[in-house]
Image (cartoon, rainbow, N blue to C red; front, top):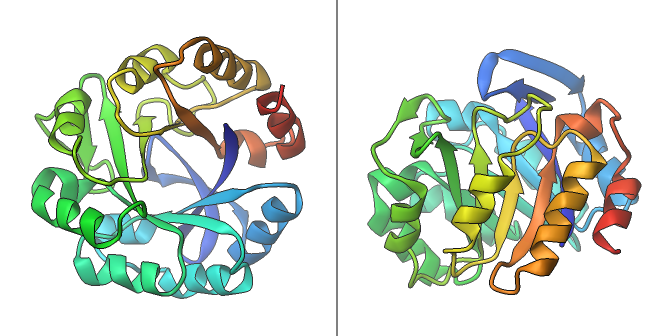
Length: 246
């Protein structure tokens, strides 16, 4: 299991939101590229980069910054989401060296596109399951769907996806802890490795995820995404990584 620092980009800056609300943005750095350098230098094996403006508009907005990070750290793992809703957008990143792209909205509105991309780029597509209560959110979490996480998983169970990311949108950026119970319930039904996201606040929560994952051989937790907790220095990246290595 790995710790994956998040870099959310809005207006060219590194920010964190609360529950995905754009008007809640806190700027933590004017230089996302320097932030990427910081996390990699502290031992990160992968970065989770989201184009927030792209998620809102439906197409990449901060792609120049993201591609520059990929170029500067060509030997590192980077997963990118936000506004990737066309085959061209996915190809733009994947052909330029981005390790994996994250798709969420299109899995609901145009599932065949996501399925086709997974076969065109096997092992390089991540499915984002952003849920609130029992239903999935779309369009940068601005819209509700009538699809449950479990149903979405079944729809894509035969595709060569890399992983799924589980995010309880009510907890993201709130430092109240992830929805561990629901995340593991979904993970137990997933044929893919799982990345848990949304609300990590302290090291005890990471330790709990590690412990549950270790005790359940039928569950594969690939990693945990950490955002605000790292930026507000609730713990260091090195401390978090150490817990996963126990």
